[in-house]
Amino acid sequence: MTDILETIREMVVGGKFKDIEKEVQRAVDSGTDLNLLINDALISAMDIVGKRFADGDIYVPEMLVSAKTMKQGLDIIKPLLTAGEAEHRGTIVMGTVKGDLHDIGKNLVIMMMEGAGFRIIDLGLDVKIEDLIDNVKKEEADVLGLSALLTTTMPEMQKVIVALDEAGLRDQLKVIVGGAPIDQRFADEIGADGFGADAVEAVQLAREFVAGK
Image (cartoon, rainbow, N blue to C red):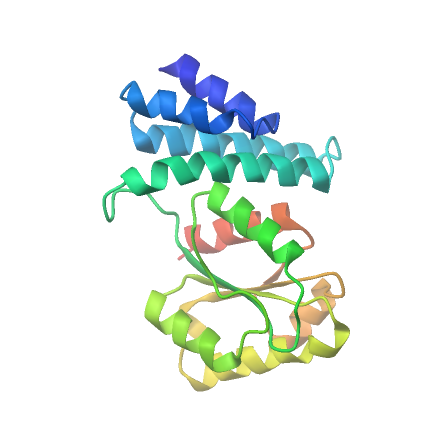
């Protein structure tokens, strides 16, 4: 079993997306525990990828390919899990704020978050404040991730945080913001709990926030 997990881990790290589905299916057919497959193969592989990215050994294109490979493997396993069987670290609602139609960075963060074991609710692009608030309530989110690429849409992030406060939800979750024009100073100014300069930082923040609840 260890050999299968190691093989899958190496395939994700190496971005072998053309072969990952066959290998994961082989592991499933051989009776490998599904949570072991998720945690000890797919998630641990993305931990390795994240560290290599943080160390400057790989760059965004390589990380994207590994994340795509991990997601394809995860897609084989997900339908086989009964409700509640998967060991989620927490629930994260993600969206690009109203007025902004960019999602490449957000989608990479989502793939990395899934690879770290989080349950992700992706609301997509140009998300209205009320939709964010509704989903935070409905999904009982631990973290809200807000993305923006346009400087003109950055103020929308503060409006979301104000709306969370007005809805009595602000103390129940953490807010992480990110995007090319965002920095730590802006995150502090609008009252966000954290700023992810890249997908690896965003995942690390989410882990810390959920562990601290």
